[in-house]
Length: 249
Image (cartoon, rainbow, N blue to C red; front, top):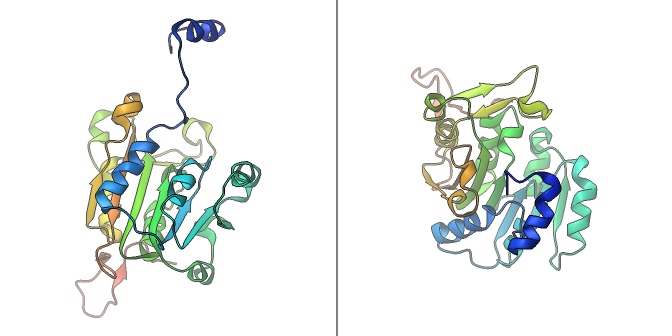
């Protein structure tokens, strides 16, 4: 359909009996299925955090797990859009309206810790990506899971296959206004290791429905294995305290 002129698309779709997919971002369905498979299933009564729920489709899937509490956080600018799908939810939600990275440590502490954090389509809209991942890691309970999905660097193959971050400033990527740093898959994996995740499984969620974006986005499920496996630097001198990656204030 991509090569059909816009003015003829409706007629062609009707002619061939084309049916629109049930969701705009269909890769989210196999990503959720991968999460359930890798985690072995999530028993009822867990605490779940979703960062940036978009249209609420993932929120509905997470609600089906019957969590003890389902919390989602989003920017004030998303208020009206969230209100539309929240009215259709038949599950109690805790809504935090804030920019996660700009919350105070006390505000994050009041949110508590979680067994699952869903974090899709958000990372690349933030400049302080290592710090973001570290904060999410610290909010997970040991044994908990982070489900991550992000756009990735796509300027050239060599950089895509390495651990690089492409910076777009002062002009943001495609004039998004928020995308200043596009990381490669390797960069994201390195950051996950640095902040403490050492069990990271890639999801192949794009292959069934969205093959055209394979290599342009990355999704994975990361498990927090212990209380804190975060890496440190400047630790070769006994005089230095442990400087954890991403903990700088």
